[in-house]
Length: 433
Image (cartoon, rainbow, N blue to C red; front, side, top):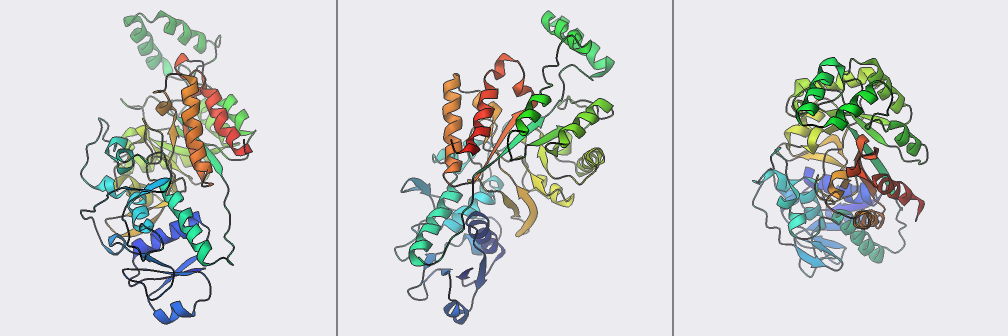
């Protein structure tokens, strides 16, 4: 166990040290403000304060973990060997930066509470982030800093055996609509037909009715392929089905269709099932609760996780709603147009509510690549290169790689050509290749 001496034990301090020490490095941690207890401890120990007590392992603290609320924090980013960091320390400190304050800044999404420009859907964009503007968006810096901390501890306490963690993957399958043409109902089929006629998309009309009369396979129905892939790997996929009411933003299948319900149940026999919250559920607790109960009645068990439509988050309201409904995990945090680490980490962490200064039970799983983010690269070679680089960044710290692909990504559309191959790269990355 690591004992940390500090002048003040705060919720922020507990949250950050437990994330770095316990969840990333696998070391239990406790805290004391009593010098005598610190001296008596005969295993790993360090002080985290403004000044050292003596010659102990000491990291000089910034004020961020001892504050409450938001303040005008100066985040000047500097190079640190092969990575970058901020909140520099003096020469007395065992590390040149206060990695705990810097990690809290990223994990709490402090910058998303500050004034910023949103996109047309009200989302926080990569271009507004500290990581993007300082060139470390594609590095899981919190994990990198944690292992630098571990290395410094190993030098100070060579007899201590640190546990090892292992690289894993969590493939997310986002299902905004299970089918392109099937189960759409008479009115939507007629409406789609007239829309295609108006735009002279005659091939679409032919395809629509070929699918409806079972002469062709529905282009969005790729579930058999995905489940076969699930059978080949030990890490569980998680499917997020949209089951909200039809709206301008949500064009999913009606949950009253028994074949759609059967599909969700069949997929649930092999993979985890989560809820893709509808667009209007994002800011409406009542709608979100209805959709949660609807999904639980289909899968006959408690909902394990959610994902918001359009990857939209309004902090802290979006996460407070999930906490209120006792949804244990969320897979929304990430950037739709950029590969990288929105919270600077490839380790799941708990949502810290900056307004109430508490760690909540909601576990946040950030995704590191969305299929749409790879579309900006024209050639398959470029797509593979960028995907392999981000996988390598996660493997270097034995983290958890989370990708988001849609069910239609595995269809025959030219837009998604070669995406099956990209998905296979992710699945094969656990083989040590």
